[in-house]
Each structure stands twice: as structure tokens, then as C-alpha cells.
Length: 372
Image (cartoon, rainbow, N blue to C red):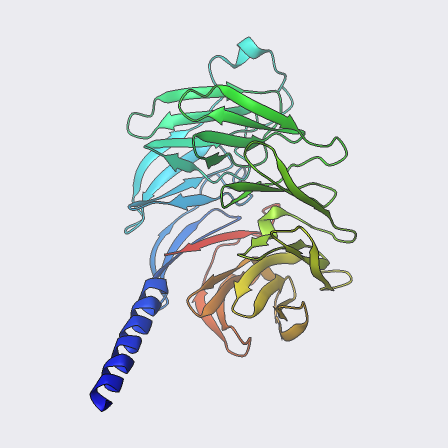
């Protein structure tokens, strides 16, 4: 009996260790509004590599990256897309997006619109990179050959990234959403948003379905066939954006001065909590075991499953960008250019790295992180 109990405990320990190691992250990647890119070893807090920013006059807002098996692919506001070796930071591949040669055929007027890549997460699908630009172009380019597979033209400035669901590329065009065949670039379908609820921010994909958040705080959930699952209208909020939205198994969290928790299946309000009254901003929402962690410019808050604030950490200098959860800690950058980590109880804050380039001349404070 003792031997059996020992064996059971040993197996449980091994399974627990295996689960822990599977969940552990070892590398953290970071970019900021200055558009430097960093890779850190999470265990020993060492910088592995750093790719300097460039053309800072134009590249003065954060743009995002995606990570695959070997590379980190980063978009820049000025139209550059660079593929870095994610182990060394060496530049592997680069393109500079420009207006397509056939753009004049469509007679869309972008004369007064600067050519930019706004808020792009470069999609990598089957050896192709898919993205959109401010002159209404959605593009697919073969990475190996740099040849353009297709370009879809539309008359709207695009402020968010395309998303892929099955064989469709979905793009939000402010007043509407369009679905494009991923192989041919041909329009498959489209749907108009309510004219009183324009959507300019990022759409979110979860379980193959779509979340959008309008400028007037209408949260919508629907299928790729545009079948509405539910809508939820927030009554009081500010600075609301899908960039600080969190979707979990059971709920959707979004807001600004007030944070809303909405049941993901039913679209019903679970709770709402006022985070601040003025002179502050919601930066990020991250998941924790028994609620959510919320970062504002001035403090970090821990809320339980009922929306009650159960812990808070006042910040000596203002936070800058997102709060990112990796392993048992939360990572964030402050306006002093220092990256910090803090435990889930908000009791132990430590300096992770000094010397993050945040460039005070940029237009919008933000960061983006990913760990693996």
C-alpha cells in the first residue's frame, strides 16, 4: 500500500512538473512606440538581442509583430516589414510597401492621406505575408520570392490588421467588414456596420468567431457568415479599444474609466467597476487565476471574479503600454524607460531591465509583447 501511494504521488508530481514546464515561457519579445525590438531571457533577465529603431520621424507609433518557428516579423508605420531571426535578431528579409502600380485604375482619392501601415500584425499564412495599408490596399506577398500574390483595393483608409478565419481574410473598413478569398484576393462577401456604430479598431477572433467594438462602445459578437450572436452596449466608458480588451473562456473584459465584464456566451453584463474618475487611462487587461489584472497609467489593480478590487500597486512613475502575463509574473514598462515585473499578489515589484527606448517624441504611448 505504501509503495502504491508513493507511486501515485510520484506520478502526480511528474505530471505537475510536466504541465508546469509546458506552460513556462523562456523568451519575451518587446517593441515600443519608438519601434525598437528586444528579446529577453525571462529566467536570468538578460537581453538576448536588440534591433534598433529607424526613421523615427515616421515610425513614431507602435506597430506589431508576429512570431513563427524561426522568425519575428515586424511591421513599421513607414511601410517597412522586416523578418528577424528570432534567436539572433539578425535581419533575414525586408520589404518596403508602396502604392500598388495599378492603384490609379480604381480612381480612389488618397491625395491627402499619408502612406502608412497603421496597427498591423503581419499575418504569415502558407509562406505568404498578408497586411493592409492606409491607401485602402490589402495585400498578399510571397515571402520567398517577394512577389505580390494579389492586391485588393478599396476606397477606405485601413486602421487595423486583416484577420484569417479558415480560407477567408477578414478586414474592418470602418463602415463595413469585408471577406476576401485568401488564395485569389477576390471579394467573397461583406456586411455594413450600423451607421451610428462605426468600427475603426482591431477586430478580435476567438474560437473562429468575431468580436468588434464600435467607437460608441457597442461590443458585437458574430460568426464569419455575419450571423449575430449578441450585442452589448456599454453605458459609461472612455478610451475603450480592442487593444485593451481581454477575451477569456467565459467572459469579455473591455472599457476605459469603467471596466466591463460581459458573459461570452450570453452577452449579458456580469459586472462593471469604476477604475478611476479623471486624469488617468486604462492601458491593459490581463488574465489571472481568480479574476483580472488591470493596468492604468498610475497603478495596477487586481479585480476578483465579481469585479471587486482586491489589491493595488501605486506606480512611482507612469506606466507605458501593456501589462503582459508570462509564467507567474506580469511585465510592464514605465515612462522612465525601465521594464518591471510584479507577482500576482502585487506585492513584489522588481526591475527587469533598464534602458528601454521609449522616445518621448512619439505620438502615442504603447508597447507590444509576446512570450514563448
